[in-house]
Length: 195
Image 1: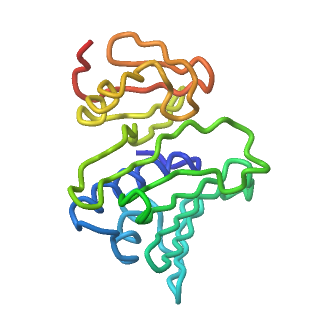
Image 2: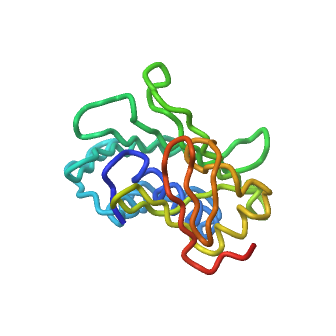
């Protein structure tokens, strides 16, 4: 897994938060979230009262745990705010669900469309009520998003296989790979994709 841009950190952390909420039957602790951020390859530089700072060569991440909410910001180490992203995980009392969202950290400067479906988990049954397409990124000739078989099944169930999980653009499939015609991301299903 490569974390060279904020989105490359946000997707795997959001997916792990989703899994941890289901396992814990509630939001994970700040220490658990710190462990998740370290799992994706960022080093913890500072941990103090109400904040933790992580970094690799390309991305800086801030963990800001609040009461009944977790906020994780991902910022390019170049300082560019235009592609900064924020993960917000919380319990929504109105819909009685846990929600994990990936949002532009700075909506005024965000240069691209963001079409990421939030994770919505029923607060009583802990069943998924949305169809998020999250995975891990790899950087090569082009940026690739790897999704597992479970994620692919949910995505197929949503009826949105031709919609890019990153920008909302059009996907074109060939076998178990798809390329977004708008943002250029290549999506690869790691288990055999069924048509």
